Image 1 (tube, one colour):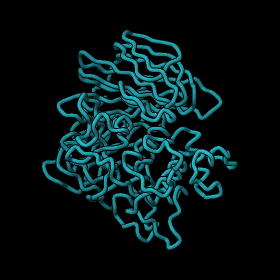
Image 2: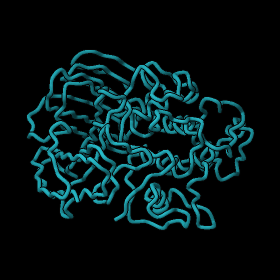
Image 3: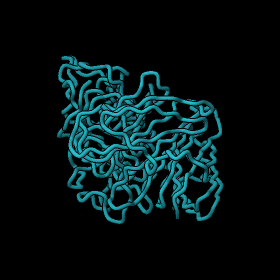
Image 4: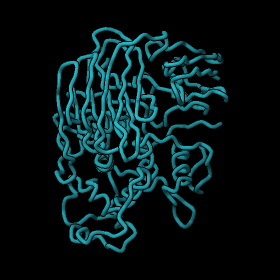
Length: 447
């Protein structure tokens, strides 16, 4: 086992930044061209700032950081068995598992001298290639001549031309400041520009009241704001609903449906999203975020359990504001989303997490129809620990860091891997891997 230590580069943490009236980052004013994209990705935990609440949008993104952003955007978990993939990828570095997994998957190939140059700034053409390979986008083999007419400095025979053409056709580009006749493929990509590329590629809806400065890159989406227990119709964007609720409609492309609701008292909820099977890639993802709180950060969020075309979240929630995000894998799919009150088992979320001590082990059972169990531990000093799951357990495990944990410079803790934990409080989610019709037994320890 090995630990992941502090890195000076920007790294992502398991924290979601809640929307606020003030700017999320002190150096990203509301009128900054990429402010909506940065905020949208921050809400999805894809990007984060620095401890001094800056984002440094004009700083260049290096190759390791760009890969990490794209892995976060696709919620990929890198395989931790591939090491020593490039001679300049340091063993135990924060980026090692991502870079080596990307090499294993064929997303990157490095340079002829067997280096990856992780600290080297990524340029625009490299960033577009990474974006296509990690997100699984096809690119045209026959490049439309119009691309050559659109960008005077693009050689249609160059290796990167198909990625530029595809990015243009997918409306990833142009972004603000890149609307002119020159693409300048060799220029380093900034953090702000990277946020815009990724937001466009994922068709991330921008925060309410904010618009995309690049009209050529905007998607035709509609936003509804409905108060009440139900809504229906062809819609996407954001809806304000009263709990319990039912929501139905049709996604526009793969743009997420976002539902905001308020709980007036603590309840155990079940949030269920279903999409109609179609001809494309089946499935969906769903996530729930608790909004607001005493700080601008929200570390309480839930990743839904997916079985086919259904995604379910069951959680015991406090009285607070929440945001539910549903994202389909297939374009223009029909959906139905419900939020109801159910009976819990006393261990259904962050607020009911059971205490587990350092050096202790416990056995647990996830009953039929239940989804997950929860545990919590607090460290008064930094410690190197492993959240260990029994090998025969048919469950997955996620470690969440709470607001009092400083994860700047770290990748997130992972189960079954030694980690240098900063002081603070952590919550562990143990979730079944498949099927809700059977019992799942497991063992968990903190060593």
